[in-house]
Image (tube, rainbow, N blue to C red):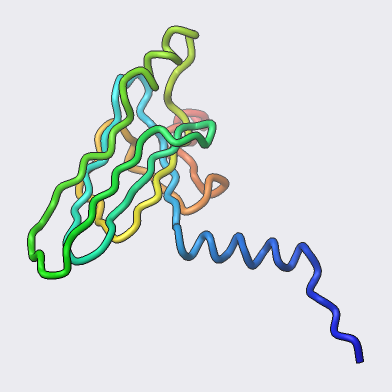
Length: 138
């Protein structure tokens, strides 16, 4: 009896699911007209605490990484904010820097956000802005 390897689509689905479990991503909207966004994170406990912020094109806009030693009982606040040129380049082209941004956080807790709308989702397809939905119905 010959054992056949699983089909490529099955392996692709498994890899995508593993990535979603290991590196969960949250998608949110940037407020219109903001010139800067920032996410404040809290790191407590041993290990690497990391976060990455992705712009509307899926490119990394900012990252933060902090290592806490085993016996360190301190609390660390980590700012995650892209450099202003990320927003200024779009403004020069006449584009809005808003849209669907995303963030990945590992071993850290989000304690504050600035420049984002309060609506978040686990996938880009599930993200919607209820304020736009209400204004289009009127």
